[in-house]
Image 1: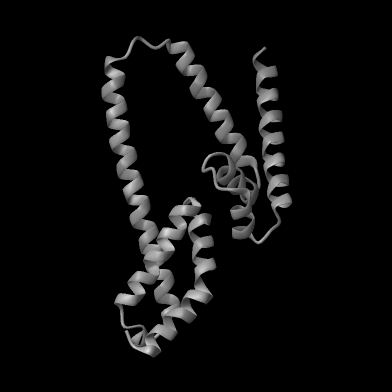
Image 2: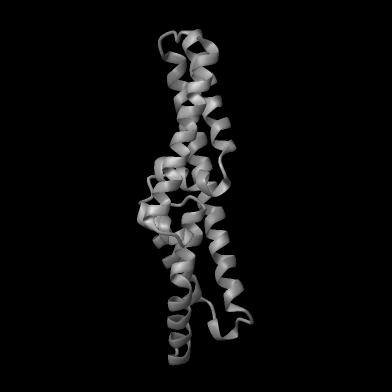
Length: 173
């Protein structure tokens, strides 16, 4: 690697490391994986001729998008395998009460519907915090807001889910 290429890479690293991590976190990649994927972007840049790229900026995010697509494809494949294993085990499981199963599915559908009613940003922050276990500080950085603002979004989502669940419960009683 030449001094010029090393300098180019260092400048790109300074300029794009944080935005790349934020890009991956916004797409529901955990912080650790986001850092690994960002490192992979720069490893791929090292193996390319940086100086010969017409638009290194576009190339960086194209590489990031490709890595994200590969990661999601791998996760989908693993989920499919896990589902197949679960179904194989489920076939051997004891009888499941159909009423309990139906009740669980209805509750899940109500939760999904309630989540869809939330503003997009609030929903994304809630999912990152509660389902993806992304630290609130990382969420705040990714969205360019304070940790307190992240907490307010989470409280808003929880309040909405609680109110929605209460309304549904009252309808069925």
